[in-house]
Length: 434
Image (cartoon, rainbow, N blue to C red; front, side):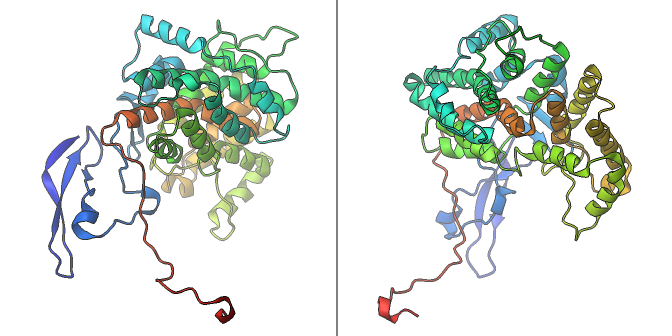
């Protein structure tokens, strides 16, 4: 952080003396006012529900410019990473700050591959869940349970142990997600195959079975890999902030990632692509689109257009353009262009991009709209969408957690409040209470 020559002066209308605060400049993006001494100097807090104007940390991992529609991992535009790098290279970048060379990539892939299996006793954990349990509840439990098995990497103050935990989480998440799916449909678990790529290995564990060899389709594997890259990190969002907050207490990394998964489970966060696909199913057919659009435009109807617009991106979501290309590639590869659901999705996309109501409000299709369609085409059930998201975001959570642990300014998270309850009062005897 570089201190700006400018200072922020807070003045009061009640005659209190004004207070000056330093202003810090980042590499790019808005300057920040350092208000850490506000309470000590004034006895007052700031009030910012949802933390919409509050920087909770300094970070060098991911940068978003919502107005321009930009997303960068370690300075590299997502548009370039999604085309010129695979998910393992993106993981290495987020963890280490630089893209790997050929040898570094080979060593990293080999290291991750060595940790893909989970302890055999994990199978008994799965048997404790009902078969119809939501995969996210299964993942919260099983990821948290990893701390029971890997006591040798729980010392968060040891950089080497933090690295081992990071690799274990990256490697084991696909195995656990695939196990959650297999358990839900009553099929045997598939052990990982370390000769396959990260994404190909996951698809085999999801869709393969012991009776026959799984055939890897490069187009579909590339589509999944792109989904993982585009969802790998997204700055200080709700689940990442949850991981940092849990980590600030000194909790072990498996517990922190389990907390992130729990937060991601919320429909306003990780469940958006599931909601988008459910919306398409509710619309039913192309013929019903006009009536649906009218309901969306009617503020009193309560009908929302899911998978369009974004809280951060005020223009086009840069990930959506890349996911759209992948979406059309997959539909073409699988011959699904005429499938009713996908025809409906493409027609809705066309209308939203042309209708003045949506264009003027910048309600463009976002990454969730397309990723839901792609995952559905790949044969991934809607209930697993958020699990795939968690698998992708694990690397971002780990990178952010690791950065926070190493930050000398890191303190346990402790938001303050504006108390609006009862003032101090005495407890009356039971007989006197009305």
